Amino acid sequence: MGLKHYGRPEDLELVDHPEPKVAPGEVLVRVVAAGINPVGWKLAEGRLDALMETAFPLIPGWDVAGVVERVGPDAGEFAPGDEVFGYIRKDHVQLGAYAELVSAHVRMLARKPDSLTWEQAAGVPLAGLTAYQAVKHAGVEAGETVLVQGASGGPPGPGGPLPWREAPDRSEPPRICSVNSASRTPRGQECRCGGRRRRSWRPSAVHTPV
Image 1: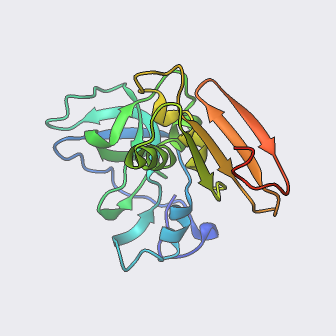
Image 2: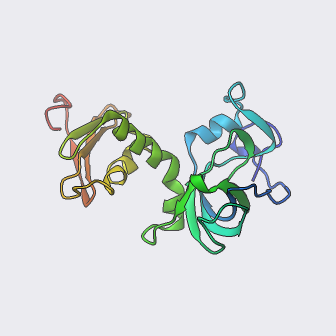
């Protein structure tokens, strides 16, 4: 699915494009599922034109889950048949994940866990990396509480369990609490690696129930 010019989702159409070239360090992935993020429609509408080199037909999609079809030179990390997922944005924007085949550098990919469906895996990369980098940058440690304001987007969800699966002490990961006031009713959600608990409160201060 691609755009022949900047436009809206309804302007997406089936387009024919040659099979992507596979450069050194890259693999060719047969796409099973692709993620959707707000940056996708911003890109499609041309809002990032001043920042990124773009060519048409423009095939959106930076989050992908699929199966390695072919391996390029110096890309021994993967083999044909490997199930992978990843965030595949390149500096030059044109050939994204809304396609049958897409090339990606091995550093952009990881092996898909058996515990994730294809759709779940495709929804993880951008949101998950955003959440992971945020808590790492903030230096959050086990047992601390993180409050995420305006948590109606993707990152707060994966931000609960994902960043701490590799923590040395998984018995007590940080608590990730989020607040979404889109309906003018603050809602809190406490996330742990092993489960979730939801809280609603009104009109008390946010920090009181957290």
